[in-house]
Image (cartoon, rainbow, N blue to C red; front, side, top):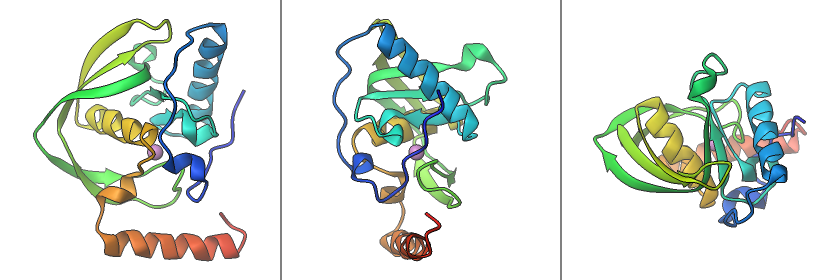
Length: 169
Ligand code: NI
């Protein structure tokens, strides 16, 4: 099932999500649906709040479906190590059409549970590191625009308000 993506302005995006506690068939189905929804929206990462579900759950595939082994499921993720700095353009499916350069760590180690509830650690660099940070932020109710200047953020918010008024958001 493909879920519609919740856009900026919906409060679900700005509140901390609830931990995943049950690792059952229903969660497995939700994860599959999240991958499907992410691919349909042409994203490389998707957090559950972005489909209106306030759970600490995210999926990532930086290869855009090219490599099935590149799929990452993150339940209850925690960032445990960061290293270096990299400034690159970043976007979000919940803030479509906008992109801004964001400085993030170049190398990130994350600890999370997989779809079966098993804890694992994974280290990613560059785009994968960025996805780990971006998706974990989502689960804490934080969007990438909180990492840009207030001036740029206000400009984006103003443009979004116009789009909302025009019924285009
Ligand atoms: Ni996002």
